[in-house]
Picture 1 (cartoon, rainbow, N blue to C red):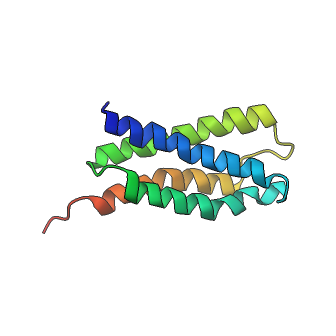
Picture 2 (picture 1 turned 180 degrees about the vertical axis):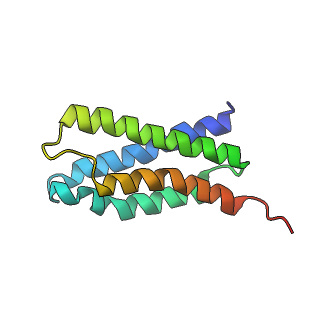
Length: 121
């Protein structure tokens, strides 16, 4: 693993997860629990797109596939440990907004890799 991959995959993956987690904790006091994920989604989507297209180092699709896998693993494990197990939500955690979040977490770096790949004539 290169330093570039470690930063792209794990540093940015953790930063993106932490952003959503902290924003969720802040919104907990002012937004109904069932809507927190939907309120976070546009902000997290914008930040994730910015990171994927501006901060990730252009590399081959293998790099982006590894980044997508790492980001998804960080999101799933972080949510499970710090929301499902620690907070034990009364109505559960895994709903449509969470599945959308996981899908976008994996698909955005893959899309960035595809769109940033050198175009063949």
